[in-house]
Image 1 (cartoon, one colour):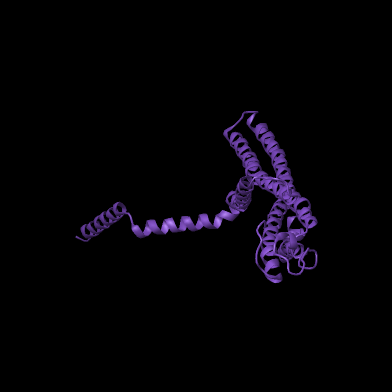
Image 2: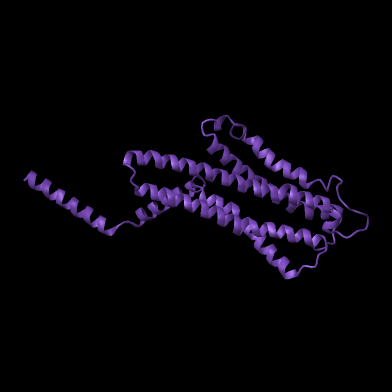
Length: 262
C-alpha cells in the first residue's frame, strides 16, 4: 500500500480494493468456521435447528457479501480521489476507513475467534472432569491410562491454541499497529516494516492450514484416499512370498485330489 502506481481511476481502485476484499472475506470465513464449531459443541442437540446449519447458502452469502460491501465503500464515494492525482492508498482509503477496518473489524474478529476457542476449551475441560469423575467411580479412584491420554490430549489442544495465537496472530496484530503508525508518518525503519510484513502476513495465512490439518473431518477424505492408494499399490506389486505359498498350496491340493481318485 505504500507504493504509488501509475493507474487511472478504475485501475487504481481495483488494485487496492481487490486484495482488501479477499483478505476480509478470508477473515470472515475463519470467523464463521469458529462460530459454527462453537454452536455445534455448545448446542449439540439443537444444532440442526440453528440457522447456520439450516441455511448454509445464506451463511456463504453473508461471509462473501459483507466483506464485498465494506471493501467497496471507497468505490461508493468514501475516498480522497482528486483529478490528476497519483494512484496511492491515500487517495483510495481515507485514514478514518483504515482505522475503522483495523480497530473495528480485523482486531475484533481475531479476538472473537480467540474468545470462542477459549470458551470451547473451558467446555472441554468441564466435560473431561465429568468423564474422569464417572470413570473413577467405577474404577475405585484409580488413575488409568485412559485418563492420562485424555489429559495429554487436552494439554496438546491448549498448546496448539497458544502457539497458534502467539506465533500466527500476534505478529499480524503487531503489523497492523506498525502500519497505522506508518500512516501517521512516524519514523519506522523500512527493515522493521518489511520483516513484520513478511512474518505477520505469512503467519496469518498459515491459520487455515492449521485448522484444516487439526480437524479430522477435513482430512478424512485425504486419509482414505491415501490408504486406498497404498493398498492398490501393494496389491499391484504383489507379494512373491504369498504367491509362492499359494502355488504350493494349490499343488498340494491337486496331489491330494489325484491320490483320492487313484
